[in-house]
Length: 470
Image 1 (tube, rainbow, N blue to C red):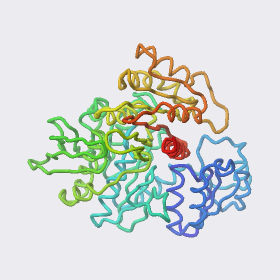
Image 2: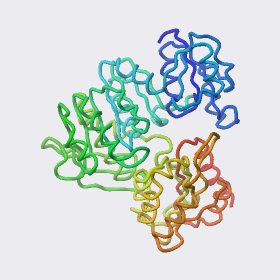
Image 3: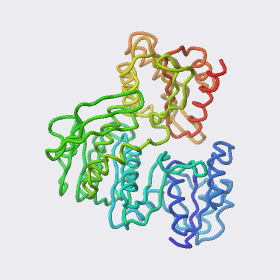
Image 4: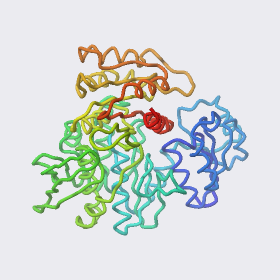
């Protein structure tokens, strides 16, 4: 890639930015555009990219000046978009983010790919951190900022360039691009409804785990069990809480922002302490430990490194508290956007006393059509009569979209299933913030959830600031 010129259409995206940084680190010439940049959103992210020597342009085609540039863009972007039209006029080669990432990933001597509908970013971050701490110098490609690697002058670190011949990456099933990757170690966290039908997911994940020299899989997840029953990996290592798991967690002890357990594997037991909370993160930790062990890292060293893993941004991230002790109002920022992810977050909160005020911004109208019923059932099942769910309208940044199912319909379903007014639809997000600030009482936990919109973190910070000023 050295001296090759790449232009990213949508360079600020959670998958695009880290890939652009990997290319820049490899000696490529990198530039890009983004609708959020044109709209004046998320300025700090673009300031950071510019400071790294990446050229930023309006999304009007002006950044494409030569047919030698390679355009990196979603396959779904219409040819009428100025960047795409200009690239076509110049006869630029076009690649999707996944095609480019797979090309880099598949060229590495050792390759760990993390798949599944939930937990990919966290497990990728865990594996990458353990490998770095244990001297393996990995290249890491993540869809979330890895807090262990972030610095004051580099706050958006979601990738890392290493020289150890090892590439660790999360891989995506939502667009089917997981099929492009050939891992030596394939990690399957779980399988649940999100962007595709379960039948499609079984086929994608079955092919994925069959490719690896080793498949790491979740023995507690019924759909993963079904996938593994039809797949033929060379070697399979399971993780979970049940007796059948090869990497098993017992003696679990949860705290509001940490967790501990005993790892049982191969006839030995190891105490494990983690700086991230919840049974779902214990499962994530088991997956990571199983993966690094398969790659040859001694378990005692891996466990020490895992204990120093501080998480990824927007994954049950503590924004702050108003007051102190058990009576504080706590604000948490979280990426939860499908039923399984949100349920894991809510279960972590409900393991301890205190009312939950859950704000959810749907990440599009399309996802609500696909999983709206499951979302409604999950909220109604996981929360109590004392809790509250608040939905604003789905995130929308332009384009043609079917709006036949929106937040109001989901709220109606939640309340019908709960049998009382558990959920509220307040269309404007700012008005949701005002409701949270007016409603919150000491001891409450406010969780801000949603995907595809980096400004949610700013929203969470504003809620905390306004509560402090109240």
